[in-house]
Figure 1 (cartoon, rainbow, N blue to C red):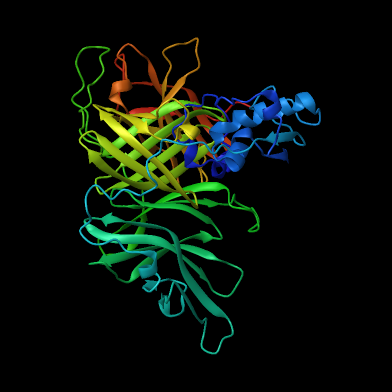
Figure 2 (figure 1 turned 90 degrees about the vertical axis):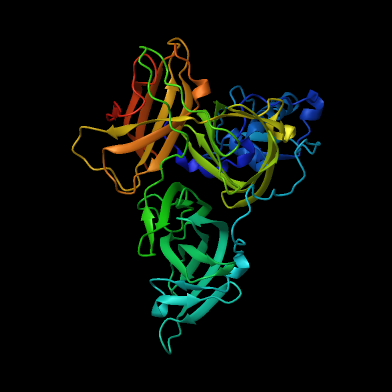
Length: 507
């Protein structure tokens, strides 16, 4: 298992979310390839995938940089000779080819309307920019924005000013049947801190009510906000414990919030995946319980593929009934990138999915999917980015549930990250194949830690062997692991009540 280098997460964008990790052919002669659009000198922390994302728009195009550099090396030895795309050395001179501008088969760059019209019109950022917010550290406990911002005296007659402004990401959704909007409220009390707060605003028939806020952190980087099963999910980057505030945030954090019975905004645990429940387990030894098969596009969809810079690329796409689309892209051993957007069914077995946000970037990644039973296959997508293999995902129809624990009498740090994977280990002579997984931050919670791994029943074979593996890390350091795994699903192994005991890695 590779070390958890989560600092690389922000370098990946949604353009690589569906890639199978295969090489993208660089169809030029050596003379053409040696013509570099620009040159680049490798610095510490660089990877070809990250550089391809930066210069070419997708980390899947890393082989283009390798091929162009090797071609340039044949006529100019100052360029590096790259034998292994996974290995770069500081100081190497790379040839960056021109970014391809060929035609694509992607649908028109329009955002599809939600599949189901909302009961009220969603709130806009401009509307939130003229609302009142309850903020704990604001003078008087609240502040009213005008045209997106506000500035008031910290105290009467004080030269210090308290400022606030509303900012993206913006999301609309429902919690317990009531409509809300969520965004970021950035505040400062006149000191050195710049504080990022989650702001959740009631949608009162298309008009904003008084917003509630929860502090996320000082000078962090909020990547995504989404409504998820009666919660608001926030993905952001923070710093490692002890790092200077001048350090760029790089540690991914995910938190969930909801509205409690008293109407207050409170932090909560991640909701369990919503999917059809499996039928009763069969009595025949070794048989696989047949999950209940859902219908339509709404639900959770899974895919697994190799990745150039990680152990595997696990994708979880959730299409909500209200038209929201979320894509979690788990680079096993490296970190997670989340994209958000919308989807709409355009025909009986056809739907458009468009992702418009990834990290803090605006994107427009559009797909047309064809539904065939429990399989989604892209029929229109950007072949210039994704190559000739259509992105394909499979319906999640069940979950493997259980707990992760350890015997040592020590506490986990608050920012510990737990990763649990469903792995196919049928072929003992081949590398294990990652099928699905979950990753979450403990936020101070201690063992036993509950997990629920979704899986696609159509991809489970009764004769195969599957295990659940678990890893716990913090600040990029592996703390505990169980890489051998615990048997699940087949050959009489359970799919619930799975107990994974992890141990410190051997030195």
